[in-house]
Image 1 (cartoon, rainbow, N blue to C red):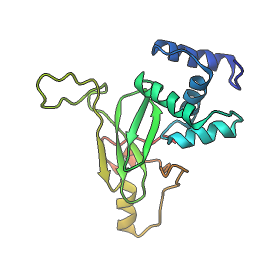
Image 2: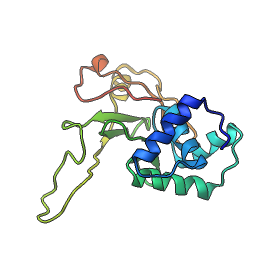
Image 3: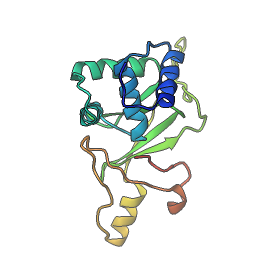
Length: 181
């Protein structure tokens, strides 16, 4: 296997894939590396574009199949942020998402329990292993910007996800944590 990754980094990715019960194929290693390097939310087509920018020629179908296996194994989370807008990120600490209707920013919100499923439905007999919450509204910056008449704060990526960084201390809002980009 030929990769543009340092040996130690490749060993870490291979170990994560194997712990999740997956074979460490070249496409899986590369996609997981792109998501790790992004440090935040990426659309599947953005993952493909970043791989191609690094000189890797993987097909769209291969990237989507790899993403499916990474999500199924629990290594990657999907945030369904609206119609046709699914964003991916490494599944490290279980959390939920807030989507700003005004600027489109996606903000990680810590789960009160810190592990999935963290919410239990009123559905007798069901075995729930995962629950995600998507809050929607106006982010603290958009609320503040409206109050002060300021301009836009979001920088949009090709997926339409903004890379706004919000520090919960700045707004005195418990529960919001800095969005990674």
